[in-house]
Image (cartoon, rainbow, N blue to C red; front, side, top):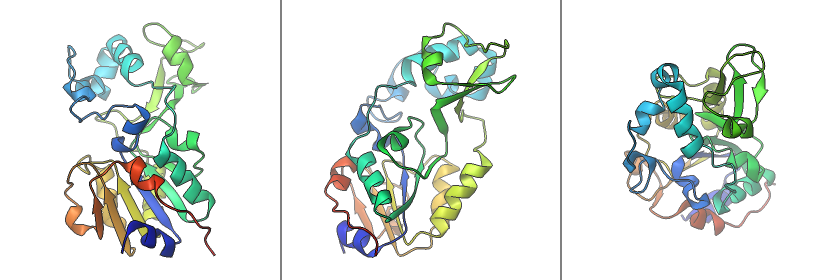
Length: 239
């Protein structure tokens, strides 16, 4: 059975995506050859993007964050658009993403569980006031609220836990799905990758450039670009 046939016979699809979903929008994959992990900085990116570093060296954190983590002009690609189309047709029940770029929402998806947060939301650590990403990008040094508190991006840093409400929503969607499409992720980052164990549906599909630890579990494995694969899907509304 091919991907189109699986989608045609499914009525509650969940899409689980990682960095590879956004590379076709020009956002680099951290672990790819030209990704952030292979560029030279005074500190490795995983150290800069840790809670400890954020607390101890906030100016250096925000210098890196502005430079590499705010692709605000990036636009949804074919994968994001097709998923929004599948949701609108009543086929897709949720998107679960490890990405923080907000492109699924920008493409029109309504039910999106952002496991690692979003650069589009920022809040004062003192009073809780909301700030958009442009405020962070245009600020100097450590961004400060009107009240004097430090403004923190709503992204999950290394050493921080995932949001319980987001995880619960994602688990519920996965448990009730009859099909799960996993794409653009190496499935090596936990606890996010562990969510796959909650899937009890019929069809599990993996779309990723490289092999993953879960390839043997999948009914269909495609080592191709996510956008190209999903762009070819024809969408028909659920009965």
